[in-house]
Amino acid sequence: MADFNFTMIQNDFAAARVTYRKISDNIARIMRGQADATRQLLAALAAGGHVLLEDYPGTGKTTLAKALAKSIDAQFKRLQFTPDLLPSDILGVSIFDQRDQHFQFHEGPVFTNILLADEINRASPRTQSALLEAMGEGQVSVEGERHNLPDLFFVIATQNPVEFRGTYPLPEAQMDRFAMQFTLGYVSPAEEVAMLTAQEHQHPLEALKPVATLAEVLALKRAVENIRISEELKRFAVDLVGATRTAAGVQLGASPRASIALMKIAQALSLFDGLDFVAPEQLQKIAVPVIAHRLVLEPQARFSGVSARGVVEAILKKVPVLV
View 1 (cartoon, rainbow, N blue to C red):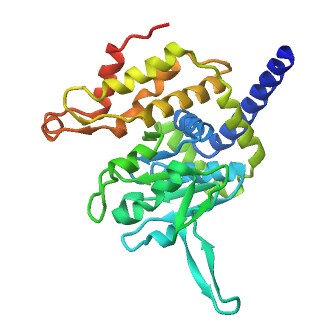
View 2 (cartoon, rainbow, N blue to C red):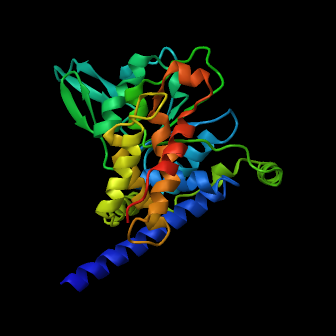
């Protein structure tokens, strides 16, 4: 029986890796030179987390989200965040039906598999907070009624780091709901030339077709949960996160939610790399995009040039791996 279960799990791993490669290769047809960003995005998806893409305009944040959504035969909705956006515009609203004489709930855009929250920092804090329960618990509460979200619920939020007029910084609780934050950056000149050639007549995104079903993506998520991680590496993840709470210049360190995200995303990357266990390198590679955005630095430290990324990189050099 043990051998049978082991074989089943290994088969699940193999099928999950095929799903990952199909989606990754499909996105690569659109997103040239963004293999690392695609890998991190899919790791967050497979780990059940959410992603915040912060980068300059025109670097492909929205295109990456659309390419992922088109690669999976699942429901996708895009929500443009603006200052006049209301919580009900995200969650939905109950409307009185005069014919049936009762209130009927009309679902908002949050009821989907993949949600693109474009320019999330342009909405008011009240509207931003409407996503907190959805991202943290996979449910929303409207007028005292709880409504569960789909099994696959993945938020990709974008924001512009250089334009501050008419924006509202995301609160710490909101930042903590994102498993990862990373940038795409500019591609090489050769990749940019190839991009121009690909878009001479039409955007290649229009011709992109799904390569994975919703069931295959859910199986990928289940396979990630079966990747083994030792007690020593769990402690290493906790020590990394814990060190941010006592680091110099840090006003608010990372929460236990960061430790959980670190473990789960390392499991996803291990699966992608053909392993059935987590290696220390997986935790170290993704520590910065998982932890840094959760830190709140003291004003004096910020003025002195200290960055959250630098704090995490310094901690990685200090905290030993006990294996």
